[in-house]
Length: 407
Image 1 (tube, rainbow, N blue to C red):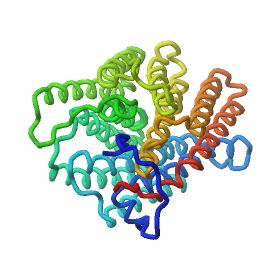
Image 2 (image 1 turned 90 degrees about the horizontal axis):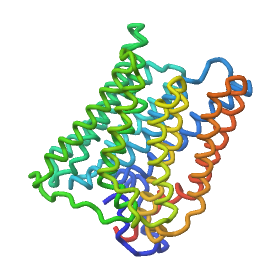
Image 3 (image 1 turned 180 degrees about the vertical axis):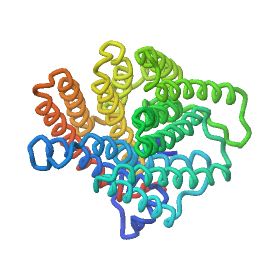
């Protein structure tokens, strides 16, 4: 299982029989998608210092920054994580080398097109990438030997959010309908990752928090209790999706934010016991708890400052999504390269990165409240986030080339 920390074997130096990297990456796509996602994230954040310092001022980088961070940075980690986890969870075959190559080509084309300042074409390519990824994993789901956890209904809804969101953004640009674009951006930028966290969280986050893993059915037949939990997940995901999609047309967006926050908090509290006292206080679990807390703070933010919606979104993105991404990715890489003995260790690099990300979140939020000096605050936030990413990458990413000695 991805990120499984039950093994206690320490890392041993690899002999000359180390498997080829491409073979490792096709079985465990995180090995190539995590580094690519990190590079794209650094590129997307660097746009602000380049713009505000006058190095590159030919266009305002808002749209490109958003797409590179969602479709590129977070997308890279999503494709790498789920491309590794879902075949294992369902007992299906991993991706082949040609399938991985197809996904990588589409991913590179999507990112490259956005960098070339062709946002609509980039979104169309992202739709193709999503369709290819869902088709490859859907084929494996049809051949599954095990039934996924009921919360994975939210994973399917999350990808539906991403696909519908990108489609609405494209149609909004073609038809000159900003309301379509706003609705699509909400689904793509918020709904996709939020629903993935809620859906995967109930199964994997307890394990990551050091709690006993929840049992999963080892057959295709739903066991007692599976269907009610699946319908609960479907209901929560449908409500969250509806509140995001309706934002441009609903007269009281604050009410939608309140409903969305309440549903997410209740479902998260019921499925992930992240506040349980028995959770060990080690670097990984502290960072994960902080990310979940900031995620909820960001969802609550519009209720207190309805005119500062973008500031609230960056609390969700920086403190929630990006901190959780680096934390979960740390555990995945360590667990799959023979370093699972470091799970309970004091990981100074992750702690430092977490502090820098939180500081970047604070500066970015302050910037929206101080328009005259906003550029300085955004620059500071960008530099801190890039430094956090570089520290994390330096300590974690070299290990993606190392196979787990126990495999």
